[in-house]
Length: 249
Length: 249
Image (cartoon, rainbow over all chains, first blue to last red; front, top):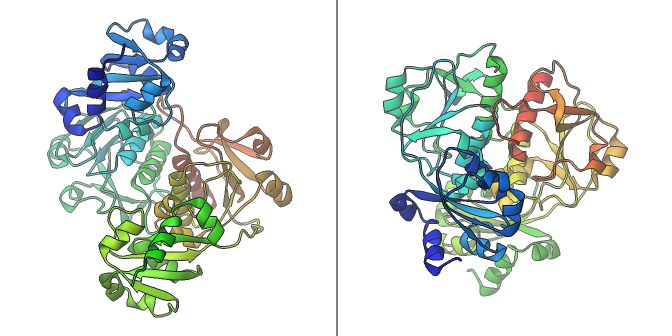
């Protein structure tokens, strides 16, 4: 049964300060909950409707922690979805562990991308293009924000990430860093590209000068009309698409 | 001075039924208001802060309709922006007039794209790639929804559009129609493409079968990871980018 205390606890996880204090976040909706059950994330509590349980018994077999059966109405009270007839999971955050990329992979670095929807969309793009690692500046949106999780459509389970001052990581890694600028090389005209870091900047300010100094190659998405810019997630997608076209699998 | 009736009237335009009844919509924020003043849209009423007025006097010179000076606080009461220290314009909708594309241009058709943010982002992408015409199925989000206008970043002033049953227009136009499907030709491997219609489908259902029958070439955005799909605005951007790379200016 769903106690008042559990309701209060789950609702508290809508706020970052409680997520951070508890080291927990929530995931909702059938697809995302199934993805998290299949992943290496640790689920502490699962709220499921009867219909979710019957549809997804294979993914629930290995699940050993607390499970509470709830109604659709209860789920919609607890989460941010207007409609949720499936499940909500309380999941442990991963520790902020750094990685070192190999020199044969493409990775994404975000310099203060503030909008959770943009971050979530970029994580989904990374997963589409087989990019497995991301590094996020401290001012980038919080990975575990429910809006980020929602926008990733489950892809957050397949992308490794850590938060760190980009200055620090770029100094350490010594990899090619590609940044989108107005006066860079036209990505349609490139004939080859070395794997490295695709660096994307803040929604209004772009790549900051302190971080921009690490860019080893400026690239440009050619425009054919009058729009002054593209949304950062759109620009990330176009760069990933062009880079993967040149690099291949 | 800003009367109570004017406040009430502007607030009513947040709802579609009043926008449609009045044939008016609102545009807010410095960039979008300047774009609308530079465009062929007719502005009926302009609310401006002192600082907007002094920064943008060249764009205000030709403006002959009603202008009311307001404070930042008043603007934020009237619009949807949390922060707006510049302007809000009440603008006349254009009539839903059909067009016939030439056989040398790329256009975009949307089959029930429901999310206003997606529609707005796609309009901005169209403008970036110099695509000047869009046709929208009747169930596609409303062009004049404030969230659509906001997401276009002013690009709504440069894209011609009309709402019509896509069945009707495709029967009439007899142009190549490109649709994104999982089993289409890989867009990275295409060596040429004829100008025509890029057709994008609904966020969850994709292109409907009735409309899909008009597709003359199925195309696929190659995936390299495990994400099952891309957001519709992201997919639109990647198709536009690949098509313009092949077609050129």
